[in-house]
Length: 321
Length: 109
Image 1 (cartoon, each protein chain N blue to C red):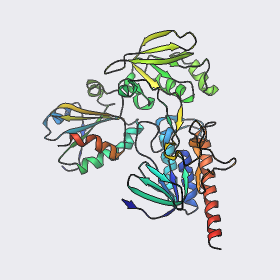
Image 2 (cartoon, rainbow over the protein chains, first blue to last red):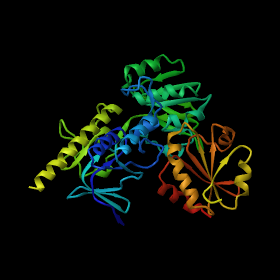
Image 3 (cartoon, each protein chain N blue to C red):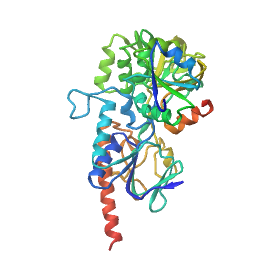
Image 4 (spheres, chains in turn brown, orange):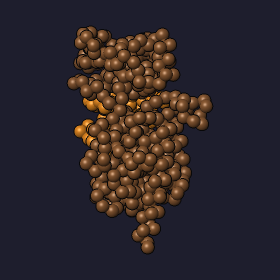
């Protein structure tokens, strides 16, 4: 067991929210430690959800677009330039009950006056029995990683949000046909993304449909699609299935400590990033189920760093009187 | 040589996995795969630390898709441990160093 030097600020998570908080906190000479997470093939990895995307077209300042992983690397470099430090591990436990706040990475203990929680959200899976064993064998959560292997095949994408449609559009580069399977009769995705899907001759949509079974022993061979209105089922032969059905906030670590909604999103005080625990701030997708954009996450990361800085100043002013 | 990561090609693949006196960990990767890039430094550290007990090699699936196809690699990163030329263990998806070492522990010479 190792205890590390005390810090003013620890940031847990390293998507646009965490890294923007790191830039601001570092420029305020708070030398934040960013516990950035571990490599993974899901969005729960250093850099967050943008690490699994390709072209980002709506981040201001990049008129020609920017690759998601490149944008995240630039944010990380910017934070490092001003003195942010990084730990490429996952926080495994926390104790926010006293002072200082404590965070563990396995047996290593880190302490700080203020904590910024920016653990983001991870992709949901379908929850079908053999889904996990078929990941890497026809079932995928990362179109940019795996699309290449489905050249010339017919595949499907499950979901109806921006990420589902972005994946479907990307996958048409490789696949002969991409079916979007969506449980509702319209998409949640933005209009521009929807138009892109409707105008792509390789994309077809199955509305009001759910994937209810996966067939295949060593490799995905077919899926069962159930019509949500009639209950009718159909077996559809497929080479690959990409899952993009939405996200759940990464808040298991904070259960019983930080206030959260029934859906697991952290609750912050209106107009701020303050949680119910003094000195603990939350920003990005972990507390936002409405906007969930890189730019809104970055904005709230900036708010969290400023809130933390002001809180630290206030603490210092009160204790030194 | 300690800590070396072998670059596999269609020409040296079979020979490398068969001739090695230690298990061989083959990392199937590509330039456009973000998670592959994240685990690259982890793989290289393991190569150095486990030199003598494990041979670490990388195969670019863009350049040598035939080999990826032969082993039914449909997702990257995929890491396969070969013993005497035969597949002994397969790991699909990126993970941190501690998790990767735990997964490999049973297969180290």
